[in-house]
Length: 152
Image (tube, rainbow, N blue to C red; front, side, top):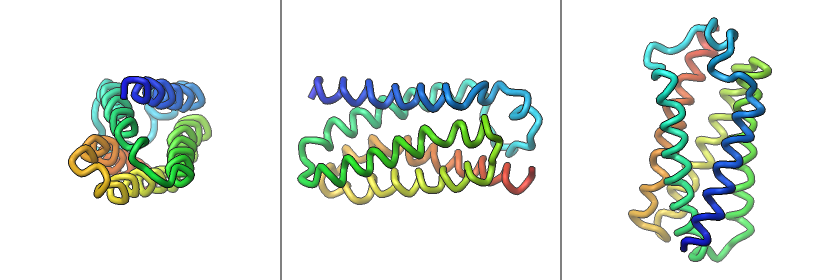
């Protein structure tokens, strides 16, 4: 379990770091400061704390999930898609300023994480709650992104 957890922690935080790097200045950019944001947008520090917590929980979730999944190809495909969408959102939204494409990406990412939650529920039971912070945060982030599409 510790070995799997370590592997998933490294992979998840590497993906998070890559997405952040590719996003340029991200939320501290002049562009982001200038766009209309949802009234429920949390303060900046919440994003870092949230993503740190999400990646810890998601890594534990994956460490439990990996040994009990028979179809590893499906799981690897879902993980690859999840990483691709998660990494892609930052540069699309923050670097290229393409808010609509960002919304499409985050809706896709939400669907993939939702699939993890519901498809593997029977296998993991209550351990599936470890992916809930990720899913809930994506719903919030999708609403923030959607607001930006409507107001900018």
